[in-house]
Length: 307
Ligand SMILES: NC(=O)c1ccc[n+]([C@@H]2O[C@H](COP(=O)([O-])OP(=O)(O)OC[C@H]3O[C@@H](n4cnc5c(N)ncnc54)[C@H](O)[C@@H]3O)[C@@H](O)[C@H]2O)c1
Image (cartoon, rainbow, N blue to C red; front, side, top):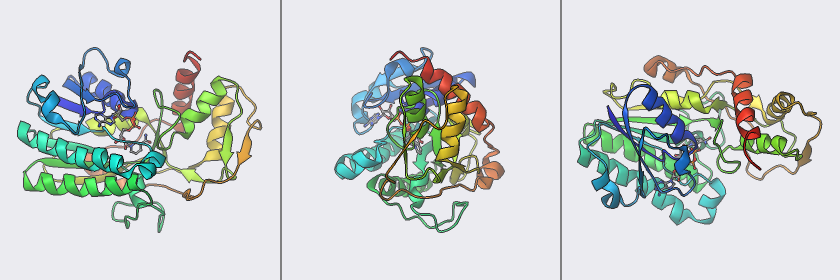
């Protein structure tokens, strides 16, 4: 199939592109390189420099495609708070523009990267897809609104709409800033013998999923869906930030005690964990990479980076 990946030069997007190429799909990447890097795009994919908010500028360079996987986004929660118009223009209007472009192309499926940020403070754990949505910041609010746009637009235009709500993704090529980048920040600190700061007591927990698993979720059953799906993509396992640090420090051969505790971040959610049974049942997707294996691969990547 012909697949367009928006944000395919980014952290998750570049792994999605690799997974698509492995499955013999033809891939086009549209990315503005705001936070992505051209060298992350495999040479076998077709790279088009462009902004999702202006499809008319790059559309002539892309052929008719069957599927659109939409990952391009403004990904920083603090930046979204500082510049809500920019966040809304990329994450909400940009998604609508991509939906409209996909329709014009006659694409039959649209897959969208949403976030566990749409849930806000969880009313219960693990969070299933029917839990109340109460995002705390513009980033999650615009993701929530964009989810509605994807579902409604796809239903109206007989496209298959697939919304994937991602847990905390980690792995090679992640920047040590942006949403849930704690693994990248720790790995970078360990690679340069710096002492990282743990916010609060480190007892806050998250559902950490390896990026190659997430890429597989985006590619699983592609082009085969007939109805709309909104699915959590995580491991269903919680890990505290302190336990994460300890595992990573051991992998790096460092003393896990060499950590500083800083003040808790205001508004930080204490615990987050996704119920992942719906993705298992409807998409036949289950995360496979154990945390120890994913962390080892991530550390190997960061420690090989030039400083
Ligand atoms: N990393 C996580 O833990 C996580 C969790 C939940 C959801 N997500 C979502 O997954 C997607 C990918 O995130 P990521 O972590 O790989 O971040 P990333 O910053 O590496 O990827 C985003 C990509 O979008 C591109 N981009 C930004 N604005 C653009 C625009 N206007 N036009 C074209 N391209 C543009 C960037 O250059 C970058 O390559 C995003 O939609 C993000 O909201 C990520």
